[in-house]
Image 1 (tube, rainbow, N blue to C red):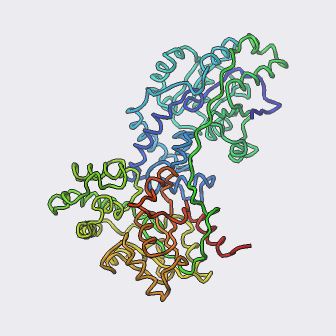
Image 2 (cartoon, one colour):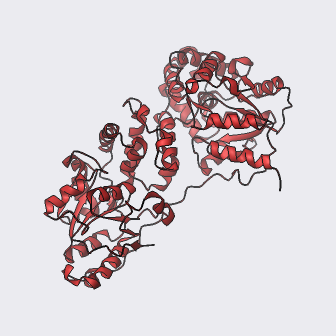
Image 3 (tube, rainbow, N blue to C red):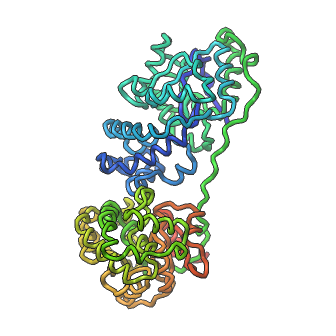
Length: 562
């Protein structure tokens, strides 16, 4: 719902943000971001990501965590398509100006492959802009786009009709700093020889835009083309940096100007009533992301007496070392006779699995999308490639271990509060263990190294890949763990893991399977990887997206029935 400050004066100029306000370049922008984020390690930017406890909002903290681990955009951001690269860089790097400059430069290199995919953000944008000019209001664009991109997009959008709409344009490479530094606004007003006051409106679609307007000393007008809920918008701003107006569409803008014209008719060359076009519909609300229905709020589970955890990508992040080792080992498959032992396409679980097998067989490396997504483990990769061929998987694990020795050692907690969750479980009298396909030489090193202090004292039992003849998805490791604890393998033992392999091993062992959805798969994908068919019957008992959901689930079971 549109709202505005009573003291907002009529505008002498409307300075617009570009992407997400006037035009939609989401296809190009998100393609470029997905190309750029896997480069963070090579750019030296992983260690410069903002610590989660310093992030501005919980959403920003989750975004930092997701990018740190998976080098990609959180699926909710991809589904909603509401934020800009500037918002993302400000969220993940904070005030680290140099890191953001490196990120913007790398983004621009990627964007060159995609830019030109541009369309008006909402229907009638050209007609509304033309009406504003007839009313005597100057128009400008101030954007973090580079000049080469903006100029081409201006010539391209709406079949070139926008080329002469604007009295001034200022791009990131026309100044020395990116937004939220106010230079892009100040330079636009300088070009137009207009004073720096609240009659200059900066119209943008993001928190960063409003922060930039505030720093420039002009009126910030928040264009809610992404259809954020009003409460969500209010949560972003303090009283100091709140926008002077929040508008859902260009129709709202025209309504606001018509209201201001009643008290200040001398400020308009033509009245809004005379100039405004026929009404055009507002931007469409983004399609909602479909969430898992195996939600902790609806499932009924037995209170755990034992909680066993997977290690990699559940409790800790060791993805960098894991993917480096997989990259090193795959070229050896032909020599080892493993290429010919891969599954036939018709035996694969999903079409995606069949494509992965075909790609590895042909190119002896992972598909770039698998590497970029960083969402599946080496165990899952071997399951996809070899199915039930235990001997082939054993050979592959052995070769992986040889290469992993060259990379392992860097290990981080998957989330900041993992240790507190493990300690909390123990205080509740719940026994805690780790089940991992890691060989013991690697696991013990990582267990002692995590968070610089190690977590050795947090576990009552641990079982590694080389402790049993068969690794997950066979249940042997889980059964050995409960045997060591002198506890029966029943549903009061929970196994928490991030992979289909973990779910299969838990169900085969007769335990409760908690799927840790750290990769943030949505419901359609979960239905794909857990189809519940005769051939692939195993499904998790519950899905949790993070450790806060897991902890709430445990506490709900602890409380018991009312």
